[in-house]
Structure formats: structure tokens, C-alpha cells
Length: 166
Image (tube, rainbow, N blue to C red):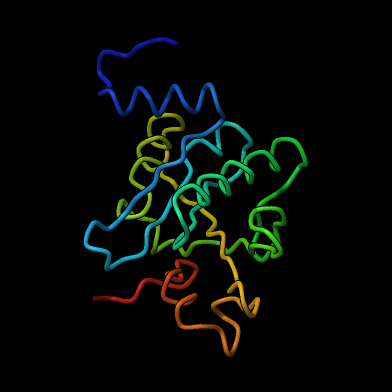
């Protein structure tokens, strides 16, 4: 482990985690409980030459496990992330669907550390991310399916759609 005196402690730990474990998973929460919690990867591009991933609305430990399992599947099973690909074994009993995040949604509110990492490691901006979307546990419907539960929809902002101007 080489320590860079220009980096702060968080940045150094992030680089160390990518080097040692293949990625870092950042968990972000709204302490007011208004917006859904989410987790995103940093390091997929360097480790497995795949886009970063993001997941919303589940328990912290589950989202971290899902991202780590996605990395494992990319490394060991040859999983390639692309629009609409179904990924099994992330949550029990259901596939998650990879959806390409719309370029207007790739911002530091969702991907701050990934954006920093890409600029530092590759010299270019983060331009490709996939949202791992999960279905409702009761009906198996995804947010885009007719009849999907409002809770499932509300817990997963549709980053695969263009950002709506505020």
C-alpha cells in the first residue's frame, strides 16, 4: 500500500479497498428519511472493466452484498452488464434487472466518489453506470410493470430515465 500525501484519509481508504477487494461500496442515507437510502460501487471499471452499479431502497447490508455479488459474478462468471440483463442470486427468489443510468442522472449527488475515482484513475469523466432494479417481493413486479406497488416504485428512483428539470 502506497500512501499518497495529497489524499485525505477517505480517498486513500477508497483506493486501498479497490486495490485489495476489487471495489469500494459507498452507502448513502438521508438522515431525515425522506429520500431512499442507496449504495453504489467504486472500482468496477478498474477491476472488471464493467460500469459502476447503484442500488436503492433496501437494507444497507443487503445492498452491499448485492454489489459485491455483482462484482464476483463479473469476475468469476463473466457477467457483462448491459441494458435489461437479468442478474440472479442477488436477492432470494428474484432476478434484478440492470438498467443503464441516463447520462443526465450521472452526477455527484449519486456518484461522487465514483466520479472522483474515474477522473483520477482514467483521466475522464464517469459516463456509464447501471442501476440494479429489484422487484416487489409479493408480486414480483418491477417499477415499470403495470400494477407494481407504489412502495417499490418510490424506493427506486428511475435513474434510467432523463432527469426532470426542477
